[in-house]
Length: 187
Image 1 (cartoon, rainbow, N blue to C red):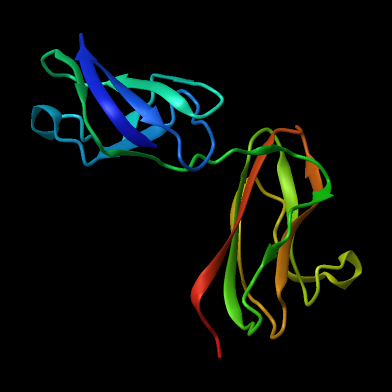
Image 2: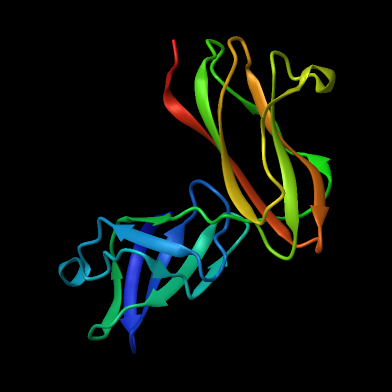
């Protein structure tokens, strides 16, 4: 978000903003403000929870967040608001997850990590040369647990990976599963 103006009343900061990229953040999302100069940059904050957001269809509006300082009348200012990504879990189900593309040279180290509420899950890390369901093969398998991780090496030429939930007990609960790729190839 770009900031166009700021004010502060009774320890509540209001920023006039324009959403330029991303989705509308939810109340409670963690924000960081950079580049403001009003009141000596007091509005430049880190890791503060969003208190409210009101944006029109064009992404123009206001956000508020807590800020302890003297009141500041509405002032034209610039700056940017960044939001930390928020993990959103999915309802646990026996299903194949979304596929993710890798660089075609292969040989990457991958780590699958997961957490689940109210259910234990069995997951498989699968890879394929082409994004064709019949081509996916197991490259890493989990134990049936609430949380865990699996480290795997991607075979050469594997260009797509996904998580396959093969079983769960108790629940369904909510599942968070992530695939992390190493930053260099194993070549």
